[in-house]
Image (cartoon, rainbow, N blue to C red):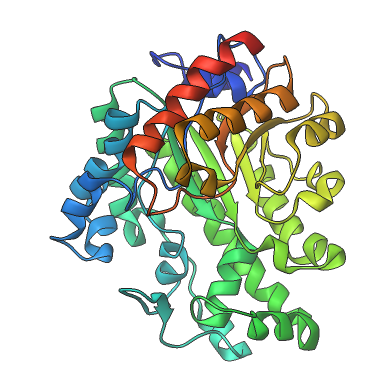
Length: 355
């Protein structure tokens, strides 16, 4: 933790960092997953000029978009504007984004030859645009709030790479798990090494925390979660443990395996909205900080209801350190900017009495 303190000593607002390490805070820090996104008019104005790929591959644009919610919402942390699928693209897969359909890999991973052809990444060459954006963002933030970097977790990246994009039933990756677990493990090994190199490069470039997004962890059964998701996420965190910054694991749908999640080696566990945060806190004790976990659809309701639901979560967590307020998943694009502001401000106001 001392090393972490040293890395963060230039921050004007270090509430998020202190909460990650379960230190004393005056109020609960708050940020939102997907806070740089389509609900903001400022974002949509840029999106009208550029396609999504150009946005995340142009450091100047990524910087501007990352800073928008910091300026508009006054959140306690910025999160890098990028995409989790830059890693498989850097490994040699052809990736395109289509309006209304999302990402698409033209040649999904379906056999051993394709796995063998995946190349090791060199972040400074393959993902230089991300690292340049981090440096620019840090300069523009000037210590106002910390910058969170991120990657997709190995299992979630594998799911996209094998399915070829978004999927309803994830039949290809689940079939691979049962029919050829050795090949899936080999794929996950390669992805894990790439994720470790990528996140280490992000940390060297200047991010002050990292979050591993395991969006599709909930697809698995208990044994599968342990064998194909948790095992590789843990390896990532073990490799980053001595780099002096907080590590966050957000495994959507995996709250039912909280006892297993305690093995992940992160500092913070992100919870989706299906988990009672008080129940989770009672089970993890002082081992982890917890992040979450308001249902994103609450932000479609009235300011009164938003505040009520925030108070419920704060009350359930109780008077203790180690809570970072967030949504249980990303903010929805049809949320009004005014309600997003209500959310941030209400957390700031209501959480003071819990510290």
